[in-house]
Length: 138
Image 1 (cartoon, helix red, strand yellow):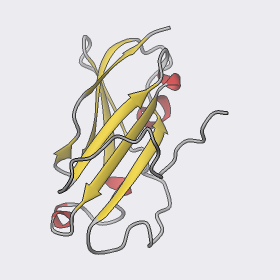
Image 2: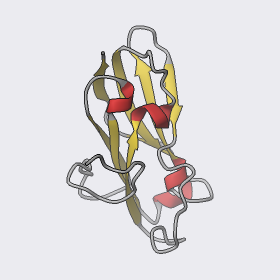
Image 3: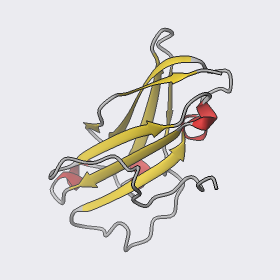
């Protein structure tokens, strides 16, 4: 059975974060075309570092960037930008953490014909994840 996307809970496929501090991580699973890839992410914001982020939910401030290596074209999207965030998921103050699982094609609005090598990373304010390499093919 295919998983429902987007999702905002932890799973066995969620990438691991460093033991402490504000951080964001992402991973990609799947192969073939863009709509067959799933972006998986985890993030944490400390109480102190939350001052560097904008208003609104932290989830809505997470961005995913996909850059075609040869063409240097980029696509960007927010895996949880339109999601409803409940108070118990993100209290207004203090440390907070969360996860996301989203379709690469839907999140970044990649064209169906996209092929080649891509570098992918996630951003949360000034924090950037490690770069993930992926190959889109038929």
